[in-house]
Structures are given as C-alpha cells and as structure tokens.
View 1: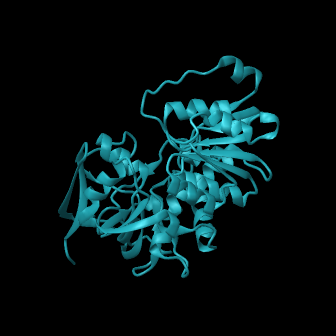
View 2 (view 1 turned 60 degrees about the vertical axis):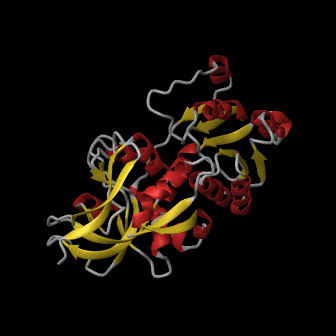
View 3 (view 1 turned 45 degrees about the vertical axis):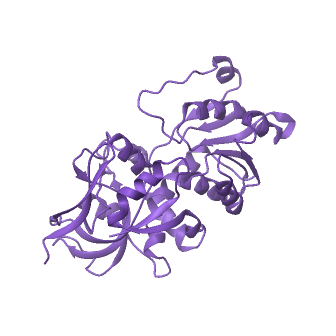
Length: 347
C-alpha cells in the first residue's frame, strides 16, 4: 500500500501548506477512511485566521472536519463496517458514561474526542467515533450531501434547545450556511421565520429556504425596530438565533425577543468577549438567553435522515468545488469581504 498521502497541514495563522505526509495507521477498533469530499466551514476559517482551536486542533496538524468517504481498511475488532463501504463520520464522539453523557448531554461530554484531518486523502476514524458516529451513506445521498451531516446536526441540536414550536415567530441573524440551515429547519417545524443579513444574494437564498420576511441590514440600519414591526403589537418574536458571532448581534438579538422569549447565541464570539446586559430587561421580561454547542449522536443520525429525505437543498449551500491543492486560496476567499458559501474540497 502507498505509505504517503497529500494533506493540508496547518502551521499557524493563515499558514496552511499542502504536503506529503504519512497515511495514518489504525488500531484494532479504528477505520481508515479514503476521503471523497471535505467541506469548508466557518470554524475552519476561524482556525485558519487564528492559527489554532483550543479544543479541536493544535498546529502543526492536518485539519478540516466535515467529511464523507469510502472505507479503505478496518481494524480487526470492527464488525459492522468493511472496506468499500460509503460512510460519513462525525468529527467527534462522546464517551457515553461520564456525568454529562448520563444526563443526555453528550455534546458536553467530559471525554469528548475530536477528529481533524478531513483535508487529506485519508483519515483515521478512532474506535469511539466508529462505535457511535460513523454511519453508512444511503444510496440516494451523494458524498457532498453526506458531508453536510455534521453542521446540520449542530443546527438541529441548536433548534431543539431553542424550543422552536409550530406557529412560533423566529428571527435568524446571519445568512451563511448555518443561518440558512436554521431557516430551513425552523420552517419545517412550522415557524414564521424572519431572516436578517447583509448580502442580497444570501437573503434571496434565505427566502428560497423558506424565510417569510427578509431584512437587509445594509438598507435598514435599525434592524431591531424592523423586526419588531413584523410582530403583533411590536412586542418582539418568540425565538431568536444569532448565527454570526458578533457582540453587537448578540445585543440586537436580546432586544428583538418578546417577554418570555428565548435567545440562542449560537454564533461563538472570540474568546474573552464580554457584552453588556440590560438587567431590567432580562429580569422583568423573563428572557432566556442560552448558547448551544456542537451535536449529539442522535442529531447526527437525524441529520443524515433529513438529507436522505431531501429536506434541504444541498446545492444551495455547497456552491463551489476545488481540488485540495487550492485549499489555501479557498480559505483566503472565505476571509474576504464577500465571503463564500461552502466549497467541496476533493482530495
């Protein structure tokens, strides 16, 4: 077997190099996956910009975490998978036995393991992931579609924790891939959705995903007033999801919600960010503010099922395709003012 592969190695801030590295070895419980598609995402762009991720990756290391592929080899203890199978792997797996796992909060697992290395020809899927978060890809699902499982699972977890119900009014701030998935999934739950964003083309996509109202922050500076004007007696919406990760957006989200409503600050701000809170508003209006992080095995399975059922337009979210050699260029594009939707990287 060939002992070397091509991979994208992160060395630091905006320093990614396409290199020849050793193919990962596998243990008895592991699977070696030949990657067919790896998707770019906002987290990868942040890792590229900052040069690291405290929980996921410490350079130098191969990075990338949204992937789908074909099994190249399995460890001797692996029984449910075999070489040649089309599979999708989540980028983590919980232990199943710690304090949080016993309370059905696997995303907060004390022993959560992460895998990185999707921007490569091969990746080792460790046994803990194989047992819980490695799934066969249904025949009708492409590798591109399957690779969307991980981000969609994060959205589904966030939506459930936000408590979205049929006939709720809901604002989604941000119309990147995550925001667009929130819009689509909220519509499937029967919510009335208002999309808030800055780019007209993405707002058009938001409308295609099911947004009932779109608000362009460039044309309408006072987005809080614009949102409230769309609600009964201007009282605010039932739910808000902030999918941008900016302090000013967090503050706007809190002022958009009605008394008794819920704000999910899904978009992570930079470490040590502090925002002011109106104590009277929070207390007397009984506003719930919460964040949600990551996904669970249940949401990974649900995400794959929804993709198999055609519940979301994959092609509206994955708008480019590029070889692995162009990854540094693609990451630079994602950092530009015009941004970019997801790109399918083909090793």
